Image 1 (tube, rainbow, N blue to C red):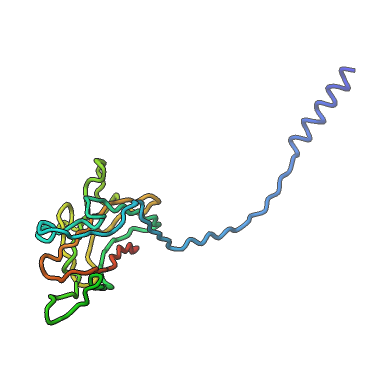
Image 2 (cartoon, rainbow, N blue to C red; image 1 turned 90 degrees about the horizontal axis):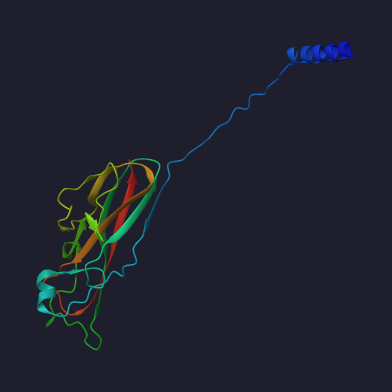
Length: 193
């Protein structure tokens, strides 16, 4: 009996020594496109109502006239830059009062009537620019008047899935316009490098 067990053990050991293997290589190709998405994370309503001289003297934040932070998020697999522009200006005369160029002052707002700012705080939390970004020094915590075309906010932000920052916007028409409802479209653009 011992002889049978030893013979069986030797037979199993010799099977293990003589084990063979085979393999198949599977070439894999992974194509990743350059991808960037952008969203707003705040719940602000962009509007301001000018009702007194102080408003016209100082301008008003575009968030129902209160101090408000517009929070943005970019997801990008490359470094990116952010710019802002303003355009698509509209005018509607006050209800029941038609605009009359003989008596009424200008009603054609331009980009120069609006300001923007990259902020360093939002609700007490420090938010500057995304990691790696180089802010436009003139707009950081200082309102910058819009110029025609694209206005730089920051450059060279790192790639990543959660690149967040805050901005503020100001309507600053001074005493240059007649009463009515004015509209414009602010565009914030993230572009991969």
